Length: 251
Ligand code: SAM
Image 1 (tube, helix red, strand yellow):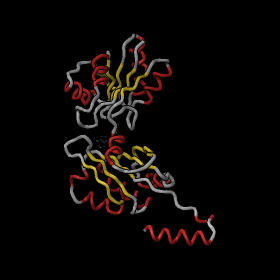
Image 2 (image 1 turned 90 degrees about the vertical axis):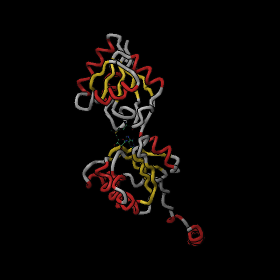
Image 3 (image 1 turned 90 degrees about the horizontal axis):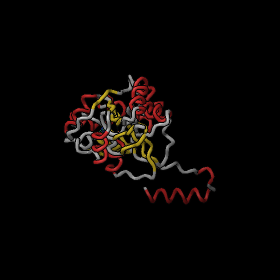
Image 4 (image 1 turned 60 degrees about the vertical axis):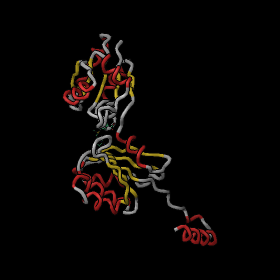
């Protein structure tokens, strides 16, 4: 039986692809790609001539049957998206689910991912991170979703955002989480104008607007982790006094 490979492709720099991914992409009978043209750009760079068919969010349901018929004919398929790891803020999950439900093997071929790349170079310290991906486009809904993340302590919050919404999203974040919380902008990762910058949410709009180029390109936004508030209601008055002195010393 054929196998469905879920293959990570670059997030900018076309060299960011593993040797295994290249060998799978040349070895399978069919590549199912989000955009055929984007796929050809990558494949021609690496001299791969495998047949490419489109599988995107609008035809993913109907594509399941087509992919399954390839797999039934002992033909293997590689799923790729325009950038990074399929099914991560990208189409792919429905296809993978449908294929797995029919009892076929699905094999991940790991590689680039914008969120993990941003985290790895941010220097933000935290034992955990929470990947949110894209927020809603309408501000009221966005603020509601952000508010629901307020109690995720000790966690870096990871978002994807389109450049034309970056200012309003940052404004909503400052409204929800306060101006003191740090944000890291990881922009155009692996590309010529790669920028990684950390500042307080309260300073972020000024930083973004200081140079028109900062509002262009692709962004990952990381919100630094925060500590849970101290539960002072359980302390006796003497302990509260000591705590107040310690906090004063530390600030
Ligand atoms: N599947 C991809 C992954 O594994 O990261 C994500 C695809 S999602 C449709 C595209 C979003 O990912 C962009 O809007 C941006 O937020 C983020 N992104 C993708 N490439 C990026 C890059 N080179 N630098 C910064 N962010 C990037």
